[in-house]
Image (cartoon, rainbow, N blue to C red):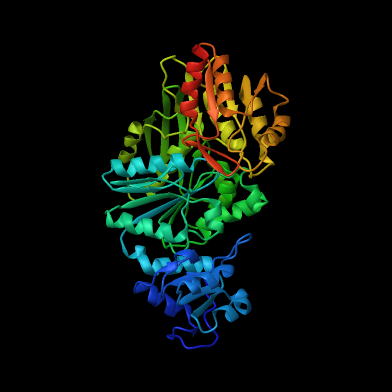
Length: 508
């Protein structure tokens, strides 16, 4: 998959000079430790100078050498800068892409591909986490051991840790997969972010199935354009061509149909008539859904595939969750499960922070959700508006140091559905919280009623104070997160806890 420059001269097996990448791979297979943090390098190890914008790995080569690095991997484009630094202190290995090279080294070191494990990657703007939980439930109910790497936690039977990143760094990812297989995990489900794909964090992995949920505006502070955002997402399907890999693609999404047309082995999933889909992408296998009913108690969903149909009853709420259920079923069908296995979805309880009800003794209908994009806010509010609540009150904010363009769009989404819109802070990070509110405020022009407070706890308490019997309160943006980032400080903050505190404060 990746092409490496190799050396143009030098003696392959010497400790100094220029070494072929293939020779370094053999050393990794025999246990050579590889580092990307110069501070962690120990005597005789390999340092990979990762590419970067504000921070460049090549700037840390001297520190790695001082700590005893015997091998240095750097970009061919940086050869003239690196060679005088390395000189005769270590063996230099020049490659086209150090990030991709790290993946191949991790693959050689951990040998995960030799350990019979099925890897499912899920990418898209919205729905990744819920879909990963549903797939986990589906395979676990079929008697398999399942591991999950995602936004909430990294976990498998007997192990769980909070997730610092949706997709961990490349070496850690391979190490986690190695540890999962040692624990006899059969299937691994992982969320794959666009950043991770663009930065080659999943390099060296073989995916047995890839899922595309949807693509809506997000992360344009990083990708700059929707087309670049799509290009990064599409790497999961176009650049990891494992034979017979199942590419499961949302045919209700414009970008999903583009992928479905491009992937020879693509399998579509979605809701509604497939005639127009087939006209656009050609004849493809399709997992087709039909919502029979949708209430506050859940969804009754009919699924059809290759001439067979079945009905599942799920406690999940909203059409967007019907799509998540279809994606999970499509994966299960491609990896050996059958339509009878799909009945186990009726016992799936839901996902922390994804339209999660806050249980309280005041009898108030309060929900927390991770929605932090215009599309996600649209979907979750639509779901609640269909549940016959009297009014919908929505608390929301926008993240700092992130895509500013989406802020008024998020506000517009709230204005379209909320009877009362409550604007507050999310994670302001290093931006002025009041300036973030200023960016979002224009989108609230059409709102029926607007409340505003920069302090999130105060805003949530204000919203609870507005509630009448039969109202629903949605606290959007943070979901499962139990922190708020203000400046560079990470402070404990839970929307669920804030809601319970708000109830007590409004009672007093």
